[in-house]
Length: 158
Length: 237
Image (cartoon, rainbow over all chains, first blue to last red; front, side):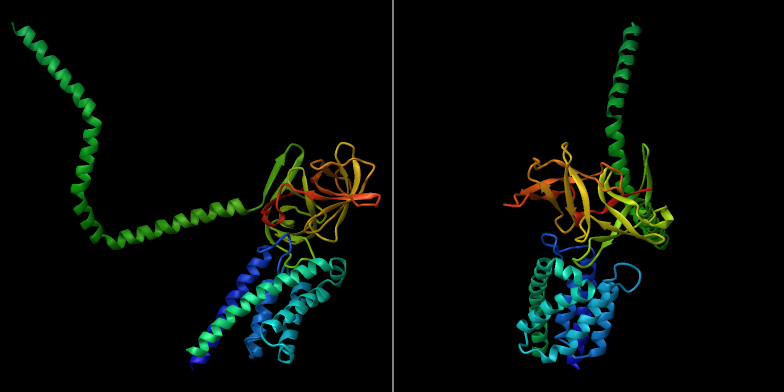
C-alpha cells in the first residue's frame, strides 16, 4: 500500500518536472553560450528508468509532447520526442550498464536520435552543437537521476 | 483711561488669535489623533456588528482591484500599432522560442488580426533587423531570426561597405570578409539583401578572426541585445 502511494507520489513529481521543463525549454532558459538543453528529453528518459508502467509512461510522453509544442499542430520536435522516449522505454531493459552510466548512454543516443528524426541536416552541419547539447543533457540527467534515486531509496526505507 | 486698557485687551486677543492660528494645525492633528483613539472602540464595535457587510465590501474591492490590474496588464500586453514618421510598426511580445537548437524560430503575439503578413520584417528596435515573419495565424506569427543556423544574408560592414555574408546561429558570424579590406571591431553591419530595405542595422563587428592563409577573414556579430532575453519586438507593416 505504501509502495503504491510512493509510486503515485513519484508520478506527480515527474508530471510537475515535465511541466516545469516544458516552460523552461520553451523560453530558452538554462542556455549556456546559446546551447539549450533538451529538458523534456532528460526528464522523460530518466523517468523511464524509474517506472515499468507503460501506460503511465505513455501519458507522461503525451503530456511532454503537448508541452514542447511550438506551433499549432504536431511538429517534428514533438514527433521526435515521442518516438525517442518510447524507444528508450522499449530498450531500457536491454542496456548493458544499468544506472547512471546507462542513463548517460541513453541520453547521448537520445539527443542524436532527436536530431536524426527532427532535422538530419542540422546534425551534419553542426555536429559540435549537438555534441555540446548531448553533454549538457547528460550532466542534467545525472543530477535528476541521483535525485530520483534518493527519493526511491527513501521509499524503500519507509 | 480706558483707552489703553482696550488697546491692551485688543492686543492680547490678537496675540491669542495668532498663537491659536499657529497652534491650529498641530492642535487639529492632536485632536484628530485623540478623536481617532476615542472613536476606535466605537469603530471596532461597528465593524464587529457590520463584519459581514465589511468583509463583502472588501472582497468586492479586492476583486475590482484585481480586475483593473488585469485590464491594465491586458492593455499593456496587446499588440499596439506604433507610427513613427513614415514607418508603421506593430509591437509584439515573444510567446516562446523553438525548443531545440536546430532553429532560431520564435512565436510572437501578433498575427493576421493585427495586419501582419508573411514576409514582414521584424525589428528588435527601430532600425535593428531581427528577422522575418515565416508563418501567420490569427493572433500569432512565427518569426525566423538571424539566430537561425540555416539562415545566410548578405551584409555590408562600416562606411567602406565591405561585403560579407552573415551566417546565422547561436552566435551569428560574419564570413567572407576580404583581407584586403580593413574591417574593425565595432563597425556597423548593415543588411544588403535585395528582399529587404537597404541599410537596416544588424549589429556591429565583434571579435575578428584571421583566417591564416585564407583570402577571407571572419568575425563574430555583436548585437546590443541578448536573444534569450528579448521580450518585445516590432513588426513592420
